[in-house]
Every structure is written in C-alpha cells, then in structure tokens.
Length: 553
Ligand SMILES: Nc1nc2c(c(=O)[nH]1)N[C@H]1C(S)=C(S)[C@@H](COP(=O)(O)O)O[C@H]1N2
Ligand SMILES: [Mo]
Image 1 (cartoon, rainbow, N blue to C red):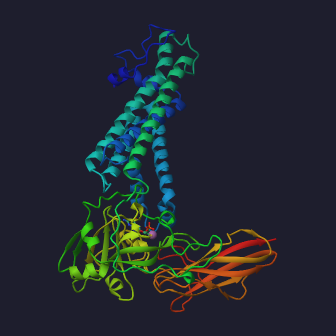
Image 2 (cartoon, rainbow, N blue to C red; image 1 turned 90 degrees about the horizontal axis):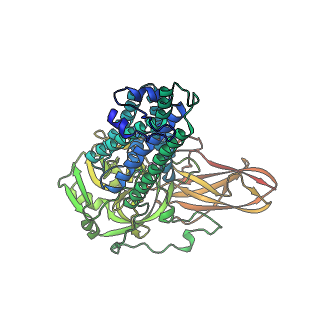
Image 3 (cartoon, protein in one colour; image 1 turned 90 degrees about the vertical axis):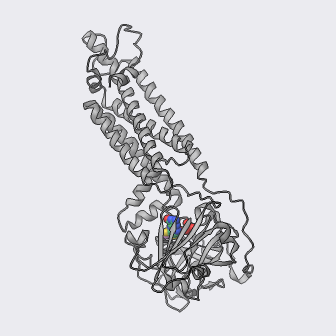
C-alpha cells in the first residue's frame, strides 16, 4: 500500500512547500481517505472503474482472442436470463438493443466503481475488495465466452481490475491528501475545515477528469477496433456458384402495389435480426467445417467448398421469430440459396430412431426439430449459404445456416452453423427449450396491418389498408378486414410465391369521419382461421388479431 501511496503521491502544494502529504511510516492513507468527501470518493471510484473498463476494451480491440469484458458480461446476462423471460428476449435481442445492453453493463460497472470509492472511505481494503469481486465476475464471464481465449479473458479481467484498483488508490490520495496533510500539520489553521483547498480540488478533478478522458479514449479505440474485427456487415466478396435450380423472377401478381407497402422480399439490410450474440461472429469460411454427427451411419465433415460443390437450389421462405408480438416485425421473407438438407442427411445415413435434428452453431447456440418435419417431402429444408442472391451476411449466419420452412427460428434457423447432430427428441433440449419455450415451434398463422399506422389521422374518403399475412408452410388462403367490429370483408391478396412464404394483402376502405378500429385476420392454407384469442409470445408464439385505431377528420 505504501508504495502505491508513494506512487500516487501528489507534488507538494506551492502554498506549503514543506508538506509531504503522506509521510512514510504513518498509516496515513486510510485515515486520509476517510476524510475525503463521499462525492469525491464516488467520483474517484467512477473514474477508476472507467479506467479499468477502458483499458480492458482497448486490450480486447488490440489482441485477437481477448474478449471485451462488456460483451462477456452482457452475454452472461443473456445466458443467465430466467426461463421464460419473454419480454426480455425481445428487449435484449433486437439488433439496436444490443447496444443498450452494452451501455447498461458499462453503467453498472461505473456504479460499482462509485460504490467502491465510497466504501474505500471507511476501509480502503473493502473498496479494493469490491473492485476485485467485480473483476472476478467479469473474469468468469470472459471465461465463458465460447469464441474467445479463456486465458486471455482471465488476463484481460485481471488487467482491468488492477488498473481500476491502482486508479482508485491514486485518485483517493489526490482527493484526501491535501486537507489531511495541511490540516494535520497546522492544526487546521491554514485551511477551512470540511473541504478540499482549491488547489487540491483542482488537482483531484484534473486527475479524475484525466483518467475519465483517457478511459473514454481507450474504450473508444477498443470499441472501434472490436467493431472492425466484428463488422456489422461483413463485406463478403466471394460470389456463390450459380444454383442448378433457379427460381423465376416474381410475376407481377406476386406482389401488390401500394405506397410504402411491405415488400414481398425484404432486403438483407432491412431483414430482422435476432440472436444471442453481442458481437456478430466472424467465421472464416476457409477453415470453417460443418460436421454431421450422432445417429448417422457415416459421420460427415464438409468444408465450405464441399458445401458449395453440392447442387444448390433457391427458394423463398418466410422466417419468423417466436418472440414476435402481434403486429411486430420480427418476420421476413427472403430468397435463400443453399443445399438440400435431405441430400446431406441421406449421404450421412439417418439411423432408425433418430427423431430429432439438432443444429449447433460455432457460438454454442443450439436448435432442435423433429426429423419427421425435415423428411416430409412437402417442404424443402436447406443448409442456406445465400440470402437474396448474395452470400449470407455475417449477421444472418455466414457462412451457412439452416432454413426449415414452417418452423420458428429458435427451433430451426441456426446461424453460423457448425454441426448437424442426429439424436432423439428426448435426449436433447435446445437453447430456448431449456429456457422454457415450447419444444416444437411450428409458426403460428398471423396477419399484420402495416398501413395506416396505429393512431393515424386520416382524411375522409378512400383509404388503402395493407399489410402481410403468413402461415408457413401451410400458406394463406384468405385475409379479412373489419372496421368497428362490423362484418369481415375479404382483402385482396398477392399471389403467394409458395406455401412457405407470406402474402401481401390490401383492402380499400372509404373512411368516414370519426374514430375507427380496424382489425385483420387470416386463414391458413387449410382454411383454418388464425387464433382470435390473444396470447403472449411465450412459450409458443403470439396469437390474436392485429388491431389499429385511426381518427378520420
Ligand atoms: N447461432 C444462432 N443462430 C440463431 C439464433 C441465435 O441466437 N444464434 N437465433 C435464432 C432465432 S431465435 C431466430 S428468430 C433466427 C433469426 O434469424 P435472422 O437474424 O437471420 O432473422 O435465427 C435463429 N438462429
Ligand atoms: Mo427467434
């Protein structure tokens, strides 16, 4: 302690050149700290925590394989969420909310720093211990990051903790020393009691501000480097081989025209993204392998080139997230390019009794769905390598993912796929199933009103009401609209591309003045109406009619 105290010893103030703030041999630091103000101690703690976080982010940015502690703790929080934390799922896993989670983790870290600073006034040791506890927690989180080096994770947490502790002691000395020293030596005559002298405060604030600024720069540079290592959209240069089976261009009747109507095919950069990753995994296709394992006669290992050498085909498939609320946009339709899953399974030879297909990702995420679902000849599950005729974007699973028509993403659509394992339904529960979501996840029939917007103010007269409806892979047979609880009226539909895709619908309404409620409902390919009874997304998908209110002048 004394060496650190000496290291952090401020230069003597010009007003009392003989003063030595913390004379050696005196247990001065704790006593001195005790007299610093709580606010100064908290600020010291915040700056110290910021320094620890900033330096560790910089290390994560500079050293490949060293995890960001922020990302590690955020990922741990995601992993530790209570079973059935339904709203949390939507809240945490939307793309923009990942930033919010990172910010929240950092804020909690700074708050812990503030607490450590205040604690240190009573006992420096306790303050240091709190920082050690936080550092250890971050270290454990870093250890659990599947794509990073555990050793570098521990090391980075240790670096962060050491920097934070050293910074805390340094700042507390700055905060405490002047008044104690001057007061102790002069009997308090030279300085007013109860406050740091101006020069001391200035030096403390300069120290804390300098550390905060440095932490911000270090953290910013680290973030920048991390994001460069994990770009939001990886520029994938390689072109895909031309599929042996190409789909024809969309016929005019396969999409409707109305201003702003949701397009039949969602562009990649507007496609919803849901996953448990805070940084998009960057997989090197040159070293990536896909294993086919478990209850198969011939386990397989396929490289990216092996996969691309198989016959590729294209199909439009609408995928949806089980967490999508009624009216939500966690659903989209794309043209996927890939390999027939059944062809790969046949090459491996499925053994009798293998009732479940498990998809594993490079990050440890898992899905599972019935083998019978995949083998049903009415649908064409695929190992997708392309999305809307370009290689899969990194955030959508480059280099390969599963696309299984008719199933929610959480049981099927494994991004960054690394293994397909044949097992039994009983033997394995996938990631979200362990958290309480339904074991099987067929997509519930739903319809959505996109225009007008809920709460819109409209002029009386003709109004176009439009949206989309989906029930992969049973198809949509009709969509109906009703106004103010009146009769259900048929909407016009786009001609469905296939039963695996959504349709657009459109209804021309003559708006009369007043407030109106507009509802939509769809029937699937068998004619079965979507459920009218509202339910939350957990555990098997949201049900109920989408409904808006508009005011017509
Ligand atoms: N590796 C991995 N794959 C994953 C997930 C994930 O968290 N990790 N999330 C799944 C879920 S819940 C959904 S809804 C879809 C979303 O796919 P998208 O982000 O391409 O729209 O991916 C699925 N595949
Ligand atoms: Mo999902």
